[in-house]
Length: 390
Image (cartoon, rainbow, N blue to C red; front, side):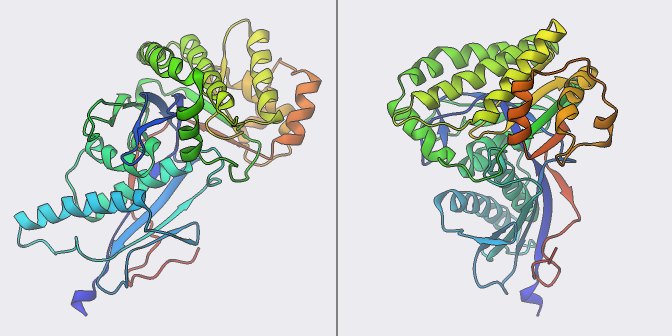
């Protein structure tokens, strides 16, 4: 039947890893942060969420499927995204009587990640960015990435930055309604294209303390936290933006590592304390320090989100030294690219560090700075509205 037509659109969205961390909400309902943040968008060749959004009168109600599992769509964060996107489509339909009236139709969204979900790899950021971008494409909305970032932010704060490629900032804003809390592009990937990342996946298990509840515990109980948002982050935002514009890796690296330390110190200062890192995480820090000491300059920078996985940033020209040092003793784990086997590093990491990492690292991901969401003809829902089995 014509009125049961299935409308659909697909997009991919990237993971972003913050170098100036978002941690803490001044308004949990609107996902308004206590501080601004900056991230690097990673290549979708290696880390991406693929999402198909569709709508049809034949659907019995809204639904969301993630990695083959049905997910509750009644939650406030998902509903906030659905509501705002529907309102924008409805406004367009009201102004153009020839457009199909799809804003009131049930939504079916199917999404899949090619990386562990909820394990400290920014899965919710990529997921909500893909959800918002896919529905915006489905509804043919004219909104800019900045506009859509205010919607994605309500789903997952960091998702607003995943609507951009390259290097992006989330400006915290100060308005109560959140209308000025949005992401902006600092520089495209093409500005500093030789940024690389090696991710040591030390634990693919789900986090003990989810980010949302963890950060609110920190806001309520950490004495270090107030110093961080008042002084540490504003200074680091300025330094990091300048480092990106100037392609100054030494400053980029120092701010990245100090920021990670500051964030995890606040987590540990939370009452009761929150520990996202484990022995392998701490060993990876020592490994990066050993690499930099051997090089006589800063060639690598570690950072950790709310999880134990280590993200190591470095430049393409230092890939042999950095990748080669880890490949030497982690060659047996999955995820290496063919080029890793050819990387020759003069650096031999200390044996006590090597033994901990050999036991703790289960997978690696080699990646680089990348682009923002991409429209695609790869669908997870077929033309009849059925979920594609993969």
